[in-house]
Length: 307
Length: 307
Image 1 (cartoon, rainbow over the protein chains, first blue to last red):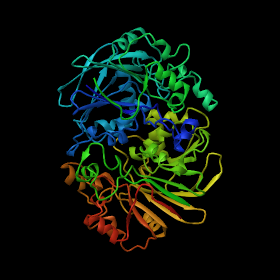
Image 2 (tube, chains in turn green, cyan; image 1 turned 60 degrees about the horizontal axis):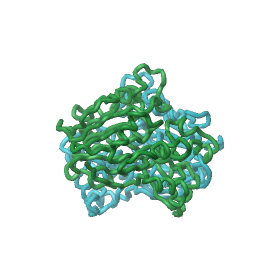
Image 3 (cartoon, rainbow over the protein chains, first blue to last red; image 1 turned 180 degrees about the vertical axis):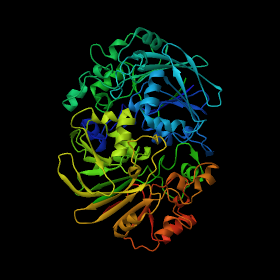
Image 4 (spheres, each protein chain N blue to C red; image 1 turned 60 degrees about the vertical axis):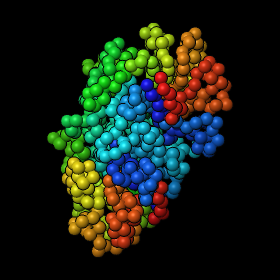
Protein backbone atom coordinates (compact mmCIF):
# COMPACT_ATOMS: atom_id res chain seq x y z
CA UNK A 1 0.00 0.00 0.00
CA UNK A 2 1.33 3.42 -1.00
CA UNK A 3 1.03 6.21 1.57
CA UNK A 4 1.81 9.80 0.65
CA UNK A 5 1.52 12.74 3.02
CA UNK A 6 0.31 15.70 0.95
CA UNK A 7 0.03 18.09 3.87
CA UNK A 8 1.04 17.97 7.51
CA UNK A 9 -0.10 21.21 9.19
CA UNK A 10 -3.19 21.95 11.25
CA UNK A 11 -6.00 24.18 9.93
CA UNK A 12 -4.63 27.33 8.32
CA UNK A 13 -1.32 25.69 7.41
CA UNK A 14 2.16 26.90 8.29
CA UNK A 15 2.71 29.79 8.02
CA UNK A 16 -0.81 30.97 8.80
CA UNK A 17 -2.31 33.94 6.96
CA UNK A 18 -2.86 36.36 9.87
CA UNK A 19 -0.13 35.17 12.20
CA UNK A 20 3.29 36.66 12.78
CA UNK A 21 4.24 34.53 15.79
CA UNK A 22 7.92 33.65 16.07
CA UNK A 23 7.56 30.57 13.84
CA UNK A 24 5.55 32.33 11.09
CA UNK A 25 7.74 35.42 11.13
CA UNK A 26 10.94 33.40 10.79
CA UNK A 27 9.47 31.45 7.86
CA UNK A 28 8.58 34.63 6.01
CA UNK A 29 12.05 36.06 6.58
CA UNK A 30 13.64 32.89 5.19
CA UNK A 31 15.34 32.10 8.51
CA UNK A 32 13.23 29.32 9.98
CA UNK A 33 15.15 26.15 10.86
CA UNK A 34 12.34 23.86 9.75
CA UNK A 35 9.82 23.31 6.97
CA UNK A 36 6.66 25.01 5.80
CA UNK A 37 3.59 22.78 5.65
CA UNK A 38 0.21 22.76 3.94
CA UNK A 39 -2.93 21.51 5.68
CA UNK A 40 -2.99 17.85 6.75
CA UNK A 41 -3.84 15.43 4.00
CA UNK A 42 -2.86 11.81 3.39
CA UNK A 43 -3.29 9.88 0.12
CA UNK A 44 -3.35 6.09 -0.05
CA UNK A 45 -3.35 3.61 -2.91
CA UNK A 46 -2.93 -0.12 -3.27
CA UNK A 47 -1.60 -0.01 -6.84
CA UNK A 48 -0.24 3.53 -7.21
CA UNK A 49 -2.91 4.23 -9.85
CA UNK A 50 -6.20 4.86 -8.00
CA UNK A 51 -5.92 7.07 -4.95
CA UNK A 52 -8.05 7.78 -1.89
CA UNK A 53 -7.44 10.86 0.20
CA UNK A 54 -8.85 13.44 2.61
CA UNK A 55 -10.22 16.85 1.72
CA UNK A 56 -7.98 19.66 2.96
CA UNK A 57 -8.53 23.22 1.67
CA UNK A 58 -5.02 23.08 0.15
CA UNK A 59 -6.00 20.21 -2.11
CA UNK A 60 -5.55 22.05 -5.40
CA UNK A 61 -1.91 22.89 -4.73
CA UNK A 62 -1.34 19.46 -3.20
CA UNK A 63 -2.59 17.73 -6.35
CA UNK A 64 -0.43 19.92 -8.58
CA UNK A 65 2.59 19.00 -6.43
CA UNK A 66 1.89 15.24 -6.84
CA UNK A 67 2.28 13.80 -10.32
CA UNK A 68 0.52 10.56 -9.34
CA UNK A 69 -2.69 12.46 -8.50
CA UNK A 70 -2.92 14.25 -11.86
CA UNK A 71 -5.02 13.00 -14.76
CA UNK A 72 -3.03 11.59 -17.65
CA UNK A 73 -5.42 12.24 -20.52
CA UNK A 74 -8.88 13.53 -21.36
CA UNK A 75 -11.15 15.47 -19.06
CA UNK A 76 -12.75 14.15 -15.89
CA UNK A 77 -10.29 11.26 -15.61
CA UNK A 78 -8.59 11.91 -12.28
CA UNK A 79 -6.77 9.05 -10.54
CA UNK A 80 -8.47 10.28 -7.35
CA UNK A 81 -11.35 7.89 -6.78
CA UNK A 82 -12.46 8.52 -3.24
CA UNK A 83 -12.34 10.63 -0.12
CA UNK A 84 -12.44 9.51 3.51
CA UNK A 85 -13.39 12.14 6.08
CA UNK A 86 -12.24 11.76 9.70
CA UNK A 87 -14.44 14.60 10.99
CA UNK A 88 -16.30 17.73 9.85
CA UNK A 89 -13.61 20.31 10.70
CA UNK A 90 -13.20 22.87 7.92
CA UNK A 91 -9.57 21.89 7.37
CA UNK A 92 -10.70 18.29 6.78
CA UNK A 93 -13.73 18.81 4.53
CA UNK A 94 -13.44 22.03 2.48
CA UNK A 95 -11.34 20.28 -0.16
CA UNK A 96 -14.43 18.30 -1.17
CA UNK A 97 -15.79 21.49 -2.70
CA UNK A 98 -12.62 21.73 -4.80
CA UNK A 99 -13.47 18.30 -6.27
CA UNK A 100 -16.78 19.50 -7.70
CA UNK A 101 -16.01 19.16 -11.41
CA UNK A 102 -18.46 16.33 -12.19
CA UNK A 103 -15.99 13.61 -11.23
CA UNK A 104 -17.26 10.21 -9.99
CA UNK A 105 -16.08 9.88 -6.39
CA UNK A 106 -16.87 7.74 -3.35
CA UNK A 107 -17.01 9.75 -0.14
CA UNK A 108 -16.87 7.97 3.22
CA UNK A 109 -17.82 9.66 6.48
CA UNK A 110 -20.10 9.02 9.44
CA UNK A 111 -23.82 9.59 8.88
CA UNK A 112 -23.60 12.60 11.21
CA UNK A 113 -20.80 14.22 9.22
CA UNK A 114 -22.63 13.52 5.96
CA UNK A 115 -25.71 15.17 7.48
CA UNK A 116 -23.72 18.29 8.41
CA UNK A 117 -22.34 18.62 4.89
CA UNK A 118 -25.44 17.75 2.88
CA UNK A 119 -28.19 19.23 5.05
CA UNK A 120 -26.60 22.20 6.78
CA UNK A 121 -24.43 23.47 3.92
CA UNK A 122 -26.10 23.91 0.55
CA UNK A 123 -22.76 24.33 -1.24
CA UNK A 124 -22.21 20.59 -1.03
CA UNK A 125 -25.11 20.02 -3.44
CA UNK A 126 -22.49 20.91 -6.09
CA UNK A 127 -21.20 17.38 -5.57
CA UNK A 128 -24.48 15.88 -6.75
CA UNK A 129 -25.36 17.85 -9.87
CA UNK A 130 -25.00 14.74 -12.06
CA UNK A 131 -26.04 11.13 -11.46
CA UNK A 132 -22.50 9.74 -11.71
CA UNK A 133 -20.83 12.19 -9.37
CA UNK A 134 -20.38 11.71 -5.60
CA UNK A 135 -21.68 8.58 -3.90
CA UNK A 136 -21.90 9.06 -0.13
CA UNK A 137 -21.17 6.08 2.13
CA UNK A 138 -22.05 6.20 5.84
CA UNK A 139 -19.32 4.73 8.04
CA UNK A 140 -20.13 3.43 11.53
CA UNK A 141 -17.46 3.53 14.23
CA UNK A 142 -16.36 0.00 15.07
CA UNK A 143 -17.50 -1.45 11.74
CA UNK A 144 -14.87 -2.14 9.11
CA UNK A 145 -15.65 -1.67 5.43
CA UNK A 146 -13.82 -2.05 2.17
CA UNK A 147 -13.07 1.12 0.24
CA UNK A 148 -14.00 0.93 -3.42
CA UNK A 149 -13.23 2.75 -6.61
CA UNK A 150 -16.02 4.35 -8.69
CA UNK A 151 -16.34 1.41 -11.10
CA UNK A 152 -17.52 -0.55 -8.07
CA UNK A 153 -14.36 -2.62 -7.85
CA UNK A 154 -12.79 -3.16 -4.45
CA UNK A 155 -9.68 -1.08 -3.84
CA UNK A 156 -7.97 -3.81 -1.78
CA UNK A 157 -8.01 -1.45 1.19
CA UNK A 158 -10.13 -1.80 4.33
CA UNK A 159 -11.04 1.05 6.66
CA UNK A 160 -11.90 0.61 10.34
CA UNK A 161 -13.17 3.84 11.92
CA UNK A 162 -12.69 4.33 15.66
CA UNK A 163 -14.58 7.01 17.57
CA UNK A 164 -12.17 9.35 19.34
CA UNK A 165 -14.23 12.35 20.38
CA UNK A 166 -17.81 13.57 20.78
CA UNK A 167 -16.75 17.10 19.87
CA UNK A 168 -18.27 18.53 16.69
CA UNK A 169 -16.84 21.68 15.09
CA UNK A 170 -17.94 25.02 16.53
CA UNK A 171 -20.05 25.78 13.43
CA UNK A 172 -22.29 22.77 14.07
CA UNK A 173 -25.44 23.30 16.09
CA UNK A 174 -25.18 21.14 19.20
CA UNK A 175 -28.93 20.63 19.38
CA UNK A 176 -29.31 18.84 16.03
CA UNK A 177 -30.96 15.46 16.78
CA UNK A 178 -29.29 13.93 13.69
CA UNK A 179 -25.87 14.14 15.31
CA UNK A 180 -24.62 11.07 17.12
CA UNK A 181 -21.90 11.94 19.68
CA UNK A 182 -20.11 8.75 18.71
CA UNK A 183 -19.64 10.02 15.15
CA UNK A 184 -17.89 13.36 15.63
CA UNK A 185 -14.20 12.56 15.16
CA UNK A 186 -12.60 9.34 14.00
CA UNK A 187 -9.26 7.70 13.89
CA UNK A 188 -9.01 5.75 10.64
CA UNK A 189 -7.35 2.37 10.62
CA UNK A 190 -6.43 1.63 7.01
CA UNK A 191 -5.40 -1.95 6.23
CA UNK A 192 -4.01 -3.27 2.95
CA UNK A 193 -4.95 -6.66 1.52
CA UNK A 194 -1.59 -7.95 2.74
CA UNK A 195 -2.49 -6.93 6.28
CA UNK A 196 -0.25 -3.87 6.65
CA UNK A 197 -1.83 -1.14 8.76
CA UNK A 198 -1.82 2.66 8.81
CA UNK A 199 -3.44 4.37 11.80
CA UNK A 200 -4.38 7.96 10.94
CA UNK A 201 -5.64 10.18 13.75
CA UNK A 202 -5.24 13.87 12.88
CA UNK A 203 -7.50 14.87 15.78
CA UNK A 204 -7.24 12.82 18.96
CA UNK A 205 -8.70 14.09 22.22
CA UNK A 206 -7.44 11.08 24.13
CA UNK A 207 -5.85 7.66 23.73
CA UNK A 208 -8.82 5.36 24.40
CA UNK A 209 -8.20 1.68 25.07
CA UNK A 210 -9.49 0.45 21.67
CA UNK A 211 -7.40 3.14 19.96
CA UNK A 212 -4.34 2.09 21.94
CA UNK A 213 -4.84 -1.51 20.83
CA UNK A 214 -4.91 -0.47 17.19
CA UNK A 215 -1.84 1.72 17.67
CA UNK A 216 0.07 -1.26 19.07
CA UNK A 217 -0.55 -3.21 15.88
CA UNK A 218 0.20 -0.34 13.45
CA UNK A 219 2.97 -0.46 10.88
CA UNK A 220 2.63 3.31 10.55
CA UNK A 221 1.03 5.75 13.00
CA UNK A 222 0.13 9.34 12.02
CA UNK A 223 -1.03 11.02 15.22
CA UNK A 224 -2.43 14.40 16.23
CA UNK A 225 0.56 16.67 16.86
CA UNK A 226 -1.42 19.93 16.79
CA UNK A 227 -0.08 21.44 20.00
CA UNK A 228 3.01 20.68 22.05
CA UNK A 229 1.59 22.00 25.30
CA UNK A 230 -1.92 22.43 26.62
CA UNK A 231 -1.60 26.22 27.01
CA UNK A 232 0.35 26.85 23.78
CA UNK A 233 -2.20 29.16 22.11
CA UNK A 234 -2.65 31.21 25.26
CA UNK A 235 1.10 31.67 25.59
CA UNK A 236 1.62 32.64 21.95
CA UNK A 237 -1.50 34.73 21.37
CA UNK A 238 -2.19 35.94 24.89
CA UNK A 239 -5.68 34.47 24.55
CA UNK A 240 -7.41 31.34 23.30
CA UNK A 241 -8.50 27.89 24.35
CA UNK A 242 -6.42 25.09 25.80
CA UNK A 243 -5.42 22.23 23.50
CA UNK A 244 -7.63 19.76 25.37
CA UNK A 245 -10.60 22.15 25.23
CA UNK A 246 -10.16 22.09 21.44
CA UNK A 247 -10.11 18.29 21.32
CA UNK A 248 -6.35 17.87 20.91
CA UNK A 249 -4.22 15.84 23.30
CA UNK A 250 -0.93 17.78 23.51
CA UNK A 251 2.35 16.11 22.55
CA UNK A 252 4.41 17.08 25.62
CA UNK A 253 3.78 17.35 29.33
CA UNK A 254 3.02 14.89 32.10
CA UNK A 255 0.01 13.41 30.36
CA UNK A 256 0.82 14.20 26.72
CA UNK A 257 0.89 11.64 23.92
CA UNK A 258 4.70 11.27 24.08
CA UNK A 259 4.45 9.97 27.66
CA UNK A 260 1.24 8.00 27.14
CA UNK A 261 2.70 6.04 24.25
CA UNK A 262 6.26 5.79 25.55
CA UNK A 263 5.96 2.10 26.42
CA UNK A 264 4.67 0.99 23.03
CA UNK A 265 6.77 -0.43 20.22
CA UNK A 266 5.39 1.05 17.03
CA UNK A 267 7.22 0.38 13.76
CA UNK A 268 7.06 3.99 12.56
CA UNK A 269 5.32 6.93 14.20
CA UNK A 270 4.88 10.50 12.96
CA UNK A 271 3.14 13.54 14.37
CA UNK A 272 0.83 15.22 11.86
CA UNK A 273 -1.70 18.14 11.85
CA UNK A 274 0.92 20.39 13.46
CA UNK A 275 -0.20 23.91 14.34
CA UNK A 276 1.85 26.92 13.25
CA UNK A 277 2.46 27.83 16.91
CA UNK A 278 3.98 24.44 17.82
CA UNK A 279 7.60 24.87 18.98
CA UNK A 280 8.59 21.41 17.71
CA UNK A 281 8.35 22.76 14.14
CA UNK A 282 11.66 24.49 14.86
CA UNK A 283 14.27 21.79 14.37
CA UNK A 284 16.70 23.47 16.74
CA UNK A 285 14.19 23.53 19.63
CA UNK A 286 14.27 21.32 22.73
CA UNK A 287 10.72 20.20 21.88
CA UNK A 288 11.85 18.92 18.48
CA UNK A 289 14.74 17.09 20.14
CA UNK A 290 12.42 15.48 22.70
CA UNK A 291 10.14 14.18 20.00
CA UNK A 292 12.98 12.80 17.87
CA UNK A 293 14.72 11.23 20.83
CA UNK A 294 11.51 9.38 21.66
CA UNK A 295 11.58 7.81 18.21
CA UNK A 296 8.98 10.05 16.56
CA UNK A 297 9.24 11.91 13.25
CA UNK A 298 7.36 15.00 12.15
CA UNK A 299 5.18 14.46 9.09
CA UNK A 300 6.30 16.56 6.12
CA UNK A 301 4.55 17.46 2.88
CA UNK A 302 5.64 15.02 0.18
CA UNK A 303 6.68 12.22 2.60
CA UNK A 304 6.06 8.78 1.09
CA UNK A 305 6.18 5.17 2.21
CA UNK A 306 5.12 1.79 0.92
CA UNK A 307 3.56 -0.48 3.54
CA UNK B 1 -4.89 53.31 -5.44
CA UNK B 2 -2.87 50.10 -5.52
CA UNK B 3 -4.34 47.21 -7.53
CA UNK B 4 -2.79 43.75 -7.37
CA UNK B 5 -4.09 40.72 -9.21
CA UNK B 6 -3.54 37.72 -6.93
CA UNK B 7 -5.25 35.21 -9.20
CA UNK B 8 -6.59 35.32 -12.75
CA UNK B 9 -8.14 31.91 -13.55
CA UNK B 10 -11.75 30.78 -13.42
CA UNK B 11 -12.99 28.31 -10.79
CA UNK B 12 -10.61 25.37 -10.40
CA UNK B 13 -7.61 27.39 -11.56
CA UNK B 14 -5.19 26.54 -14.34
CA UNK B 15 -4.29 23.72 -14.55
CA UNK B 16 -7.45 22.14 -13.14
CA UNK B 17 -7.26 19.08 -10.87
CA UNK B 18 -9.16 16.53 -13.00
CA UNK B 19 -8.46 17.94 -16.43
CA UNK B 20 -5.89 16.80 -18.97
CA UNK B 21 -7.12 18.92 -21.88
CA UNK B 22 -4.43 20.17 -24.26
CA UNK B 23 -3.74 23.27 -22.13
CA UNK B 24 -3.56 21.41 -18.80
CA UNK B 25 -1.49 18.56 -20.23
CA UNK B 26 1.05 20.93 -21.75
CA UNK B 27 1.40 22.82 -18.46
CA UNK B 28 2.12 19.62 -16.55
CA UNK B 29 4.70 18.55 -19.10
CA UNK B 30 6.46 21.91 -18.79
CA UNK B 31 5.81 22.76 -22.45
CA UNK B 32 2.95 25.25 -22.29
CA UNK B 33 3.62 28.58 -24.04
CA UNK B 34 1.79 30.59 -21.40
CA UNK B 35 1.33 30.96 -17.66
CA UNK B 36 -0.33 28.99 -14.91
CA UNK B 37 -2.92 30.86 -12.91
CA UNK B 38 -4.65 30.60 -9.54
CA UNK B 39 -8.32 31.45 -9.06
CA UNK B 40 -9.38 35.03 -9.75
CA UNK B 41 -8.70 37.47 -6.97
CA UNK B 42 -7.94 41.17 -6.90
CA UNK B 43 -6.56 43.15 -3.95
CA UNK B 44 -6.90 46.91 -3.63
CA UNK B 45 -5.49 49.47 -1.24
CA UNK B 46 -5.31 53.23 -1.07
CA UNK B 47 -2.16 53.40 1.02
CA UNK B 48 -0.49 50.02 0.40
CA UNK B 49 -1.00 49.14 4.07
CA UNK B 50 -4.68 48.11 4.50
CA UNK B 51 -5.99 45.83 1.80
CA UNK B 52 -9.42 44.80 0.54
CA UNK B 53 -9.85 41.73 -1.63
CA UNK B 54 -12.12 38.93 -2.83
CA UNK B 55 -12.32 35.43 -1.41
CA UNK B 56 -10.96 32.83 -3.83
CA UNK B 57 -10.28 29.29 -2.59
CA UNK B 58 -6.58 29.85 -3.42
CA UNK B 59 -6.34 32.68 -0.92
CA UNK B 60 -3.87 30.99 1.43
CA UNK B 61 -1.25 30.52 -1.27
CA UNK B 62 -2.06 33.95 -2.74
CA UNK B 63 -1.37 35.65 0.60
CA UNK B 64 1.90 33.77 1.07
CA UNK B 65 2.95 34.93 -2.42
CA UNK B 66 2.23 38.60 -1.56
CA UNK B 67 4.46 40.18 1.08
CA UNK B 68 2.13 43.19 1.42
CA UNK B 69 -0.75 40.95 2.58
CA UNK B 70 1.22 39.25 5.35
CA UNK B 71 1.11 40.37 8.99
CA UNK B 72 4.27 42.07 10.20
CA UNK B 73 4.09 41.28 13.90
CA UNK B 74 1.95 39.66 16.58
CA UNK B 75 -1.02 37.42 15.99
CA UNK B 76 -4.31 38.45 14.40
CA UNK B 77 -2.81 41.56 12.83
CA UNK B 78 -3.32 40.98 9.12
CA UNK B 79 -3.18 43.96 6.76
CA UNK B 80 -6.29 42.46 5.13
CA UNK B 81 -9.20 44.52 6.43
CA UNK B 82 -12.09 43.65 4.19
CA UNK B 83 -13.60 41.45 1.54
CA UNK B 84 -15.93 42.42 -1.30
CA UNK B 85 -17.93 39.61 -2.91
CA UNK B 86 -19.18 39.99 -6.49
CA UNK B 87 -21.40 36.89 -6.34
CA UNK B 88 -21.90 33.62 -4.44
CA UNK B 89 -19.97 31.32 -6.78
CA UNK B 90 -17.73 28.92 -4.87
CA UNK B 91 -14.61 30.30 -6.53
CA UNK B 92 -15.54 33.77 -5.27
CA UNK B 93 -16.59 33.02 -1.68
CA UNK B 94 -14.83 29.92 -0.31
CA UNK B 95 -11.77 31.96 0.64
CA UNK B 96 -13.86 33.65 3.34
CA UNK B 97 -13.71 30.38 5.28
CA UNK B 98 -9.92 30.55 5.11
CA UNK B 99 -10.10 33.91 6.90
CA UNK B 100 -11.79 32.42 9.97
CA UNK B 101 -9.02 32.98 12.52
CA UNK B 102 -10.82 35.56 14.69
CA UNK B 103 -9.70 38.49 12.56
CA UNK B 104 -11.81 41.68 12.43
CA UNK B 105 -13.01 42.02 8.82
CA UNK B 106 -15.63 43.95 6.91
CA UNK B 107 -17.43 41.82 4.34
CA UNK B 108 -19.47 43.49 1.59
CA UNK B 109 -21.99 41.59 -0.55
CA UNK B 110 -25.61 41.89 -1.58
CA UNK B 111 -28.20 40.95 1.06
CA UNK B 112 -29.07 37.91 -1.07
CA UNK B 113 -25.49 36.65 -1.16
CA UNK B 114 -25.11 37.27 2.58
CA UNK B 115 -28.32 35.27 3.11
CA UNK B 116 -26.92 32.33 1.09
CA UNK B 117 -23.72 32.28 3.09
CA UNK B 118 -25.10 32.89 6.58
CA UNK B 119 -28.44 31.07 6.38
CA UNK B 120 -27.87 28.21 3.95
CA UNK B 121 -24.32 27.27 4.95
CA UNK B 122 -23.64 26.77 8.64
CA UNK B 123 -19.86 26.76 8.10
CA UNK B 124 -19.94 30.53 7.74
CA UNK B 125 -20.91 30.87 11.42
CA UNK B 126 -17.15 30.34 11.99
CA UNK B 127 -16.80 33.97 10.92
CA UNK B 128 -18.90 35.16 13.87
CA UNK B 129 -17.55 33.23 16.83
CA UNK B 130 -16.31 36.41 18.48
CA UNK B 131 -17.85 39.87 18.76
CA UNK B 132 -15.03 41.63 16.92
CA UNK B 133 -14.82 39.31 13.95
CA UNK B 134 -16.73 39.70 10.66
CA UNK B 135 -19.08 42.62 10.14
CA UNK B 136 -21.43 41.99 7.22
CA UNK B 137 -22.49 44.94 5.07
CA UNK B 138 -25.36 44.61 2.59
CA UNK B 139 -24.62 46.28 -0.74
CA UNK B 140 -27.44 47.37 -3.04
CA UNK B 141 -26.90 47.46 -6.81
CA UNK B 142 -26.86 51.05 -8.01
CA UNK B 143 -26.00 52.49 -4.58
CA UNK B 144 -22.40 53.55 -3.98
CA UNK B 145 -20.82 53.11 -0.57
CA UNK B 146 -17.46 53.81 0.99
CA UNK B 147 -15.40 50.80 1.99
CA UNK B 148 -14.00 51.02 5.49
CA UNK B 149 -11.32 49.41 7.59
CA UNK B 150 -12.18 47.62 10.86
CA UNK B 151 -11.31 50.59 13.08
CA UNK B 152 -14.27 52.30 11.40
CA UNK B 153 -12.07 54.68 9.44
CA UNK B 154 -12.87 55.26 5.79
CA UNK B 155 -10.51 53.50 3.39
CA UNK B 156 -10.66 56.29 0.83
CA UNK B 157 -12.18 53.87 -1.65
CA UNK B 158 -15.75 53.88 -2.92
CA UNK B 159 -17.56 50.86 -4.36
CA UNK B 160 -20.45 51.08 -6.82
CA UNK B 161 -22.07 47.69 -7.45
CA UNK B 162 -23.82 47.11 -10.77
CA UNK B 163 -26.18 44.18 -11.30
CA UNK B 164 -25.03 42.06 -14.25
CA UNK B 165 -26.98 38.82 -13.98
CA UNK B 166 -29.96 37.22 -12.23
CA UNK B 167 -28.23 33.85 -12.24
CA UNK B 168 -27.41 32.37 -8.83
CA UNK B 169 -24.99 29.46 -8.48
CA UNK B 170 -26.35 25.97 -9.12
CA UNK B 171 -26.14 25.10 -5.39
CA UNK B 172 -28.64 27.84 -4.50
CA UNK B 173 -32.30 26.91 -4.30
CA UNK B 174 -34.15 28.98 -6.89
CA UNK B 175 -37.33 29.09 -4.82
CA UNK B 176 -35.86 30.93 -1.83
CA UNK B 177 -37.95 34.10 -1.36
CA UNK B 178 -34.96 35.88 0.21
CA UNK B 179 -33.16 35.99 -3.12
CA UNK B 180 -33.52 39.11 -5.19
CA UNK B 181 -32.76 38.44 -8.89
CA UNK B 182 -31.10 41.85 -9.04
CA UNK B 183 -28.50 40.77 -6.48
CA UNK B 184 -27.02 37.61 -8.02
CA UNK B 185 -23.88 38.80 -9.78
CA UNK B 186 -22.25 42.19 -9.67
CA UNK B 187 -19.67 44.19 -11.47
CA UNK B 188 -17.77 46.28 -8.93
CA UNK B 189 -16.77 49.83 -9.78
CA UNK B 190 -14.00 50.78 -7.37
CA UNK B 191 -13.09 54.48 -7.23
CA UNK B 192 -10.19 56.04 -5.35
CA UNK B 193 -10.47 59.36 -3.53
CA UNK B 194 -8.63 60.94 -6.44
CA UNK B 195 -11.33 59.72 -8.83
CA UNK B 196 -9.42 56.90 -10.54
CA UNK B 197 -11.64 53.95 -11.40
CA UNK B 198 -11.24 50.18 -11.58
CA UNK B 199 -14.13 48.21 -13.09
CA UNK B 200 -14.00 44.57 -11.97
CA UNK B 201 -16.44 42.14 -13.58
CA UNK B 202 -15.20 38.55 -13.25
CA UNK B 203 -18.61 37.21 -14.29
CA UNK B 204 -20.49 39.15 -16.95
CA UNK B 205 -23.45 37.63 -18.77
CA UNK B 206 -23.87 40.68 -20.97
CA UNK B 207 -22.74 44.27 -21.46
CA UNK B 208 -25.74 46.20 -20.17
CA UNK B 209 -26.03 49.90 -20.95
CA UNK B 210 -25.20 51.12 -17.40
CA UNK B 211 -22.23 48.72 -17.35
CA UNK B 212 -21.06 50.04 -20.71
CA UNK B 213 -21.20 53.60 -19.39
CA UNK B 214 -19.00 52.68 -16.43
CA UNK B 215 -16.58 50.83 -18.70
CA UNK B 216 -16.17 53.93 -20.85
CA UNK B 217 -15.01 55.91 -17.85
CA UNK B 218 -12.69 53.22 -16.43
CA UNK B 219 -8.97 53.72 -15.95
CA UNK B 220 -8.66 49.95 -15.62
CA UNK B 221 -11.10 47.27 -16.75
CA UNK B 222 -10.87 43.65 -15.54
CA UNK B 223 -13.49 41.75 -17.52
CA UNK B 224 -14.86 38.19 -17.63
CA UNK B 225 -12.60 36.23 -19.98
CA UNK B 226 -13.80 32.79 -18.86
CA UNK B 227 -14.46 31.32 -22.31
CA UNK B 228 -13.27 32.34 -25.74
CA UNK B 229 -16.18 30.75 -27.60
CA UNK B 230 -19.72 29.91 -26.60
CA UNK B 231 -19.29 26.15 -27.24
CA UNK B 232 -15.77 25.85 -25.79
CA UNK B 233 -16.57 23.35 -23.02
CA UNK B 234 -18.56 21.16 -25.38
CA UNK B 235 -15.69 21.09 -27.86
CA UNK B 236 -13.03 20.30 -25.26
CA UNK B 237 -14.96 17.90 -23.04
CA UNK B 238 -17.48 16.51 -25.50
CA UNK B 239 -20.23 17.61 -23.15
CA UNK B 240 -21.24 20.58 -21.01
CA UNK B 241 -23.08 23.86 -21.10
CA UNK B 242 -22.57 26.82 -23.40
CA UNK B 243 -20.70 29.84 -22.02
CA UNK B 244 -23.83 31.99 -22.15
CA UNK B 245 -25.88 29.31 -20.38
CA UNK B 246 -23.33 29.54 -17.57
CA UNK B 247 -23.61 33.30 -17.37
CA UNK B 248 -20.41 34.16 -19.24
CA UNK B 249 -20.29 36.33 -22.34
CA UNK B 250 -17.58 34.74 -24.51
CA UNK B 251 -14.57 36.78 -25.62
CA UNK B 252 -14.63 35.91 -29.33
CA UNK B 253 -17.29 35.48 -31.98
CA UNK B 254 -19.78 37.75 -33.68
CA UNK B 255 -21.33 38.94 -30.44
CA UNK B 256 -18.45 38.39 -28.01
CA UNK B 257 -17.01 41.03 -25.71
CA UNK B 258 -14.09 41.79 -28.06
CA UNK B 259 -16.53 42.93 -30.77
CA UNK B 260 -19.00 44.58 -28.39
CA UNK B 261 -16.33 46.79 -26.84
CA UNK B 262 -14.29 47.38 -30.01
CA UNK B 263 -15.42 50.98 -30.38
CA UNK B 264 -14.57 52.05 -26.85
CA UNK B 265 -11.40 53.79 -25.77
CA UNK B 266 -10.47 52.27 -22.40
CA UNK B 267 -7.15 53.23 -20.82
CA UNK B 268 -6.19 49.69 -19.88
CA UNK B 269 -8.24 46.52 -20.28
CA UNK B 270 -7.50 42.96 -19.15
CA UNK B 271 -9.40 39.71 -19.36
CA UNK B 272 -9.60 37.86 -16.03
CA UNK B 273 -11.30 34.71 -14.65
CA UNK B 274 -9.91 32.71 -17.57
CA UNK B 275 -10.97 29.05 -17.73
CA UNK B 276 -8.36 26.31 -18.16
CA UNK B 277 -9.91 25.35 -21.51
CA UNK B 278 -9.60 28.85 -23.01
CA UNK B 279 -7.34 28.76 -26.10
CA UNK B 280 -6.17 32.35 -25.55
CA UNK B 281 -4.10 31.11 -22.57
CA UNK B 282 -1.70 29.71 -25.16
CA UNK B 283 0.41 32.69 -26.19
CA UNK B 284 1.14 31.19 -29.62
CA UNK B 285 -2.57 30.77 -30.46
CA UNK B 286 -4.57 32.88 -32.95
CA UNK B 287 -7.03 33.64 -30.13
CA UNK B 288 -4.26 35.14 -27.99
CA UNK B 289 -3.11 37.20 -30.99
CA UNK B 290 -6.65 38.47 -31.63
CA UNK B 291 -7.02 39.62 -28.06
CA UNK B 292 -3.65 41.36 -27.97
CA UNK B 293 -4.16 43.02 -31.34
CA UNK B 294 -7.42 44.48 -30.04
CA UNK B 295 -5.48 46.16 -27.24
CA UNK B 296 -6.37 43.72 -24.45
CA UNK B 297 -4.02 42.01 -22.01
CA UNK B 298 -4.55 38.78 -20.11
CA UNK B 299 -4.56 39.19 -16.34
CA UNK B 300 -1.70 37.32 -14.68
CA UNK B 301 -1.09 36.36 -11.06
CA UNK B 302 1.10 38.99 -9.42
CA UNK B 303 0.23 41.80 -11.89
CA UNK B 304 0.25 45.20 -10.21
CA UNK B 305 -0.69 48.76 -11.05
CA UNK B 306 -1.14 52.05 -9.27
CA UNK B 307 -4.17 54.03 -10.38
